[in-house]
Length: 319
Length: 319
Image (cartoon, rainbow over all chains, first blue to last red; front, side):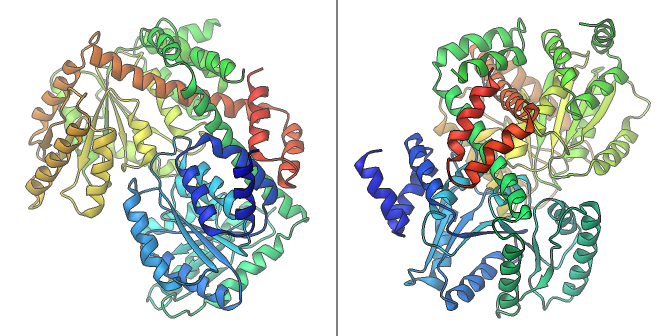
């Protein structure tokens, strides 16, 4: 490793925000030269509690995150927030979002807020998010929050990088229930009905609790039973209790326990799978273009088939 | 190839709907034994015009597809519809949708309507959709329609299997404009503002036309300029004109022309890439599970890193 890279790593490990930001920008640009740095950062990492926050638009994610950050800051913790919006192909929105959000914590160097621009990333936004987390997790943050909008496949993939996932719900209609169902089985560790003052809030909590009970019966091997909490992010109501439950979820999966190893393996299997797919895509693209064109045409002419070509390409990628 | 498989292929080629349905079910179940059949079907295929239809919920896709199917049936064409809903993890909804939709064309054996259940498909719903299209395209359908809900990454991927893509718009608010922007640059060949009687319809047509003009300036190499049409699917208004534009788009990319080859290569490159990723995933899963567990733990313990493990796995997958 070169001298410049070595001092960049040292700066990141020491918590130098601009160095980290520059590195994340290189991740966003799919700069292949960043891989050896990420490899080194992974070995240095594991310093933070990585918490995911997702939920449908309008659930009050940003407000709740602001309130959580304020809570942790008052307890003396250092917090980074990585905001990922897969639905927006335009980075402009994300940058504006950062500016608006930063206002609450501006001048506080114990808080770092960063958006992932979602365009580009031929290898996938979730893989790039994993890389950005590798950078943040090698820094002296106590908590790293990942935020995504919505609860679709992209969001689920991104949340898989988090050790503990909060699933926010608005007092809900039909679509939300559907999202909650999918989320309960797949990703949620803690469910939060924000806007606790809404008339439907109690009914939502009740419905969620029932769905969780059902999911627990289907997955009797799970020792953690996701709680359903009510918050009012605008007033801070319920935020301290939420932070306590986050701590409890980490404690229930304390390092070294079988449950923790199980979860860590699931996360790592997913992360390696994403990297592997990305690696394959990169190599395909870096192959001599004409070689691929020459092979595509007989498939288009139906003289051979895409499965046979894929087999040939896999052999070539590994060599 | 076994005798049973050979006669299954013959049945599909002859247009036997139950055989095709059974084969698509095997595709949905990720049955690896189906691959040799798909390889043979690809060589037999290319019989249909494959048209994609996508757009946000509420744009009236199903009604418009019904109207288009009716139009083509009156012209004596045979039509298959493949409905893919990536947002629904529950196949129940899809099956019910089929039943509702079939009512309009029940008893007509020149129409086949099939939903892709979106759960499972570890290799990806879009790859499975490509496989189902390989089956349908080897049958004597004149048109195969693929329908997806929404205009996100999943839908964009699925639409890439179609030769011509219709992008439906509701008379629009902010979110639709965003979706339209993304769609214009990526996938739309024909834009349709359905609900032409809505007071905002003309304004939507105007906005879309402006965005398309902008996109055309950015992509001056494109010879096809996407038209913006108005329809009222409930009354059939504008449907014949839409069908004419679909024919025109196929004619503008007639087989053997450089534009057609360009588009076919783009589609095939994507298809092969999906198959390749799927192949890799399958092999990873079929590896001795303990082998992978043993390799994951040192990554979790940060003695090595996920990039190094991915490299090792790629080497092993190719052998």
